[in-house]
Picture 1 (tube, rainbow, N blue to C red):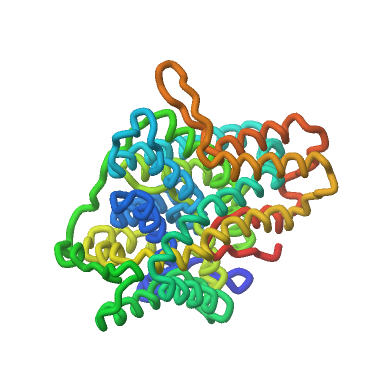
Picture 2: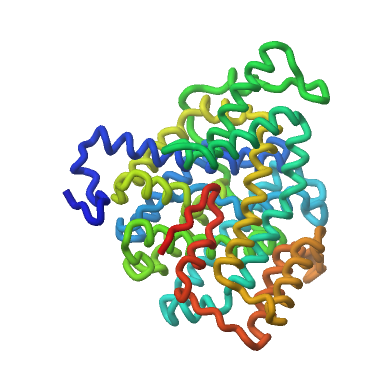
Length: 460
């Protein structure tokens, strides 16, 4: 048995049954967060958003592709990225130019097209890192830039959480309470799946409330099982090809800055957890290529952006099994579930109030991670340059709620608030003197860049 520092590196020595159980554990760890993304996006697109089946198969196949790109050495699972939720919300609300008369279902492929381009930006960063090295590149993306951008992502989604929760405050409060209880006081496996429990337990309560005739505040039924009854047990995921337009591309592309920082943080966290420098071998450029292409392939066929999951890093630490083969088993399970429409329909019947309650934690956590990114990297706010950069990013990210629209060559191009914030932050950081950030000098701070639902902050 390959076992170093108390960790198992070769899970095949445990036997196939135990490997399958370990794979199921990883699948459950990612499951709640991965399916929550299409559920949330469906609320933005009024039921015409992402498919849970497509999301699951893209997560599974994306993970397998990522492992191929990284020489089968990195024990990472690629689930749905929350960083792009703000972009989906913005595209759903586009009402000018060609988007003026579109239905929500017609807008979705354009949002996915923007994510395809965002995924390809990973390849650009990977090539630059390969040529000049990671430390030089990261000087242009220090915590004083990425931290406030991440804060803006979370805060811009806050109204959506309140709106969903307001449909049934009781269910929303129960969902919020369950997430808090399991995240703070949960033991073992339950501690790393607080979102899954925060969805499952309130859903069981909703079943009871619906059965006794209770309704939402507006008189509507708490649960609607019409789609469950009409769905089959076996079926193909409803793929749809993406479409491209410059405005959604400009909405989604800047978000890649945050998701790439998330990726780098997760690679640092996984390296710390398994005791291997994965940034050196197989190399950060390889992991970026795998993540970026998996994201582009997913969006190409109507899926969400993918990202490496901190939840599964927690499972690595908990189980002590660091063999990437176990992650690949979890990916296969996700692919199998994608061909069971009945499961997707049951998940899709989730009341919006439960999603709203969970989102109170989720969206706030995204912003809190941006704050943590700043704190743990010891950003010095006694320096005027740092105050200026953070101030401009926050005002741009939260102030330009409608973005800025330009009419160029016969078409309307909209720069969203997040795009304006990202551009402003990067430019100011480049031209203002005093940039002293060095990637790798504070590994604990670098790890804090993740946007996972239950991010791990390893002591390294």
